[in-house]
Amino acid sequence: TVFNFGSINIDHFYRLPHLPGPGETLAATGYDRGLGGKGANQSVAAHRAGADVVHIGMVGPDGSGRRELNGFGVDVRFVGTEGRVTGHANVHVDAAGENMIVVLPGANHEQSLTLLKSALAEARPGDHFMLQGEANLGAEAAALAREAGCFVTYSAAPFKPARVAEMLPLCDLVAVNSVEAQQMAAHMGVTVDALPIANLLITDGAKGARWRGDEVIDQPAFAVEAVDTTGAGDCFIGTVIAALDQGAGRAEALRRGAGAAALQVTRPGTADAMPTADEVAAFLDG
Ligand code: ADP
Image (tube, rainbow, N blue to C red; front, side, top):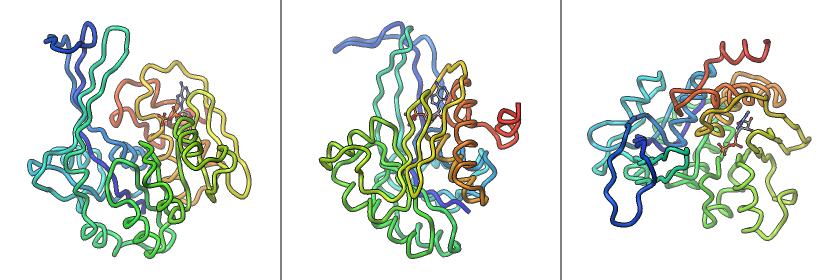
């Protein structure tokens, strides 16, 4: 089982002729709404990859976000409702594809250790636990998951300098993109190669990914025509963790992650665009 202590957002997409300036009122030419947030995206990716996924999170009193996550098939018994609004992002995209994004964390900053403890009561040693930079209570959560015997994976995104020192000793795997890896190294005053992390997974867009642990495993990206790379990293890591949870080795898990992310970037959308295990298998065999 994959337990994910993660953020849940509703993303609102507004298509605009150009990005608005100060004081400007602008009519959108299109609108879309979808499930988002790094946590929810990773849960959907892991679920579509075939894992049993239990999401632990918090949404606003109207239950929006939890409903959508449940609709994808993720176990939402440990997603609570809190006084604040569900986290959301307003994504403005202009005709050239340039974007401007406003995020309100909302209930994602009201995560509950009580709910987490209830969920982890179902965990068995060797289960997987994921968390990301968007939710609060990172170190406490990682410590509880460790006590429960879980393999803990932390997506240090967005990068939060204040959290690194306390998080790293509690994690079995840290996953970042190349920008976050640089930020982390700069913050710690070392090179990326010298980051003191037992297992570090760095993704680098169309260049592929590298797992640096006891051994170094390089996984090239698959050449595809990308139309929307939003959520590629979440797709990759969700798929990798699902594969590890299903007993795959690291190299095989990375291959599935790269295959899933390659398919995901060829489709518009984020959570909706996550491929199924069958689609990934067909792509990798093809
Ligand atoms: P993030 O979305 O967190 O910035 P990356 O951009 O590094 O993450 O992408 C994560 C993974 O998704 C990459 O390692 C790669 O496997 C895949 N990927 C991303 N962009 C592309 C692309 N244009 N073509 C093929 N695969 C891609």
